[in-house]
Amino acid sequence: MNKRDLKKFKIALEKKRDSIVSTAKKAHWDNMEDTRHGDFVDQASDDNEVHVNLRLLQIDAKLLRAIEAAIDRIEKGNYGICTSCEQEIGLARLKAVPWTSVCIECKEKKSA
Ligand SMILES: [Zn+2]
Image (cartoon, rainbow, N blue to C red; front, side):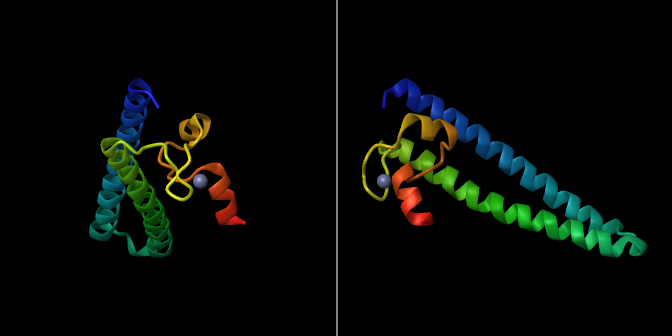
């Protein structure tokens, strides 16, 4: 992969990382607000909301780790190489899922 593409992926990954971090922070503060000013009448729905937020945060945490690992691979110079079969990952796949660490063949084998 050429340096220009690599730089584009890095910028896209960092942007995505920043947006997850700021969303997570916002969700966290929203939860804090709920605990402090929670209306007991709406307790049940509040609990549900907190639960949904936490679930979202867990998904984001997983994605965040994948993004950070991808940025790390860019810095180490092995970005775009499948961690499973060590073949190059297709550019179209990287454009769709820039934080992926496996090629489409390995991904399909894994989920099969
Ligand atoms: Zn592979």
